[in-house]
Length: 182
Image (cartoon, rainbow, N blue to C red; front, side, top):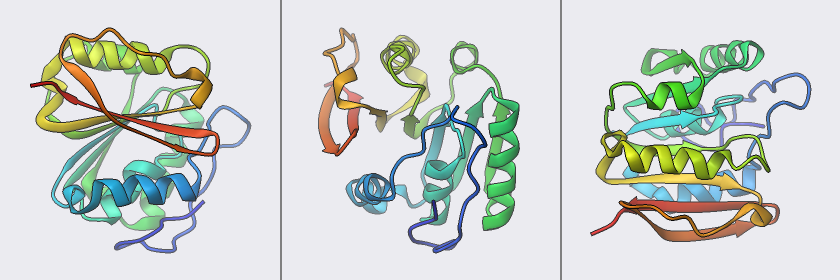
């Protein structure tokens, strides 16, 4: 696991011991950031169920103005902080120890990108999108919420404001992109 490009290109990142996190593959991460392109530069990035922090760290490396990492596992929080220190990107990061749903019940602040990569097969990706849909202030008007799931988990969601605008599959990783509907 490494930073693919940008200021921290090539830096190896630490993994969370045990099997509680499911890091995105380098292939899927590279594809994600190719899709996002220059939109990441200057953006505010929210990494939910952050795990190792590698997606938010990649965003910072590519020029995001700020990344907020939300995670409840003490082991994962320690690794996020260590990875931010290893990459020299801690100054642009905020690490929040919280349950994602508790965090999303707080005062909304708009993010350009919200990345959702929860534990698999528990319906948490859908519940998180529904929580964002209900408190739309979390997503900037032209922002994107991106869910990382296994393709078998996908289901159409009944959402009031968010619409599925793109979907990509990279082996056992599916990325679903949601935007505020017009």
